[in-house]
Length: 108
Image (cartoon, rainbow, N blue to C red; front, side, top):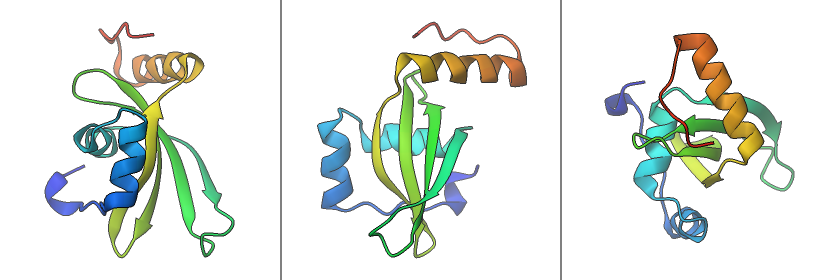
């Protein structure tokens, strides 16, 4: 995905939420701009029926994160991001091996 064609919606609320989980904005953007796996799509109650996407992906430094995102006003809004649990990291690495061959990431 080309970073020139994708804008992110950041404000104090989602910045603070990521910070509570020890995730930097740049890391979340790297996951979205990379090749994340879509885990599921859901319609979140109480959010005006806004569709939210749960994804898992890897940062440039190999950190595997789980993200909750949505689209607002033509921009990607990262609602939250956190370190993926071990089981999802294993699943992600296996899927990347299946798609692209061997991976050097041994974070799990």
